[in-house]
Length: 343
Image 1 (cartoon, rainbow, N blue to C red):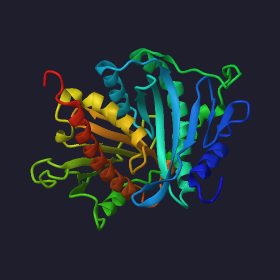
Image 2: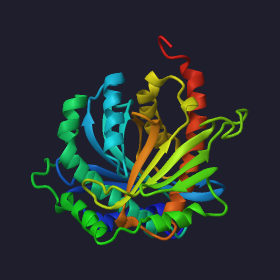
Image 3: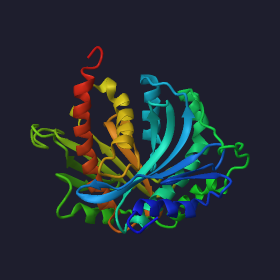
Image 4: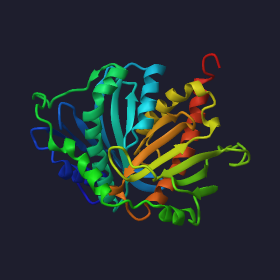
């Protein structure tokens, strides 16, 4: 590791936090894989890239849950529903290349940003362990496939789970000590100048805004009801049922982003896969899903443990970047996909 490679600095910090031990981990050139239980978790740093004109590194944390999961609308609907009702810092991802389902999170890190990125990804890693232990049997029942159990090369499956499978309790306990996201703080954010939105208001549930995301050549954002704008919410009224107080981040694309409603669940799966493969200019800390009323949406949950000055504002600006990227990506994808069957 050198000072010029923040990606490897984040990897080193995650290794210190997770303490995988030599028996249950395998190092790689830019990361490591470890076995906290009968399943594994991978940490990997990409090489340097240019993001928004500046050098950046992307670090991934991924935990395979199931393998041998076939595609199709029924299974994609299951993934979309789970991403909607279990928001966190990871996406439930289907990889069509090897038919695996995993929990995946990634964060961009720049020079000087390793401590924050490592803190966020360490929390994401702990929540992945908890979600895997709690949910993978139920997911397997709905999706088919088999558990993605493995063992270190030349070794045997781990019989006794690492205590970090209970590490989520620290996240929940830290959040219970304070509820930093209140209406007053969101009201101050609503007065931001310059603002990332066209319209904004704050109520007891949280902050609600319209983010412009019209494509080139389309009518200007807001030229008609809901046209060219994504609906953005920072919700604070209800704590997470497991992880306590925090921020639920929700972003819903305009209807024209996916003009064929019957295709929305497969589109949400495709967007999660695209965020894993295309290295867009924002963190991947949440997942695409389909909301029964809002349609194609992105949701995530930030535990109160991760609060820092400027966090709600940074999530708002990032949501705008995500909305504009998703609109452009889907425009290219629709040109290749053509009309849906029976459309």
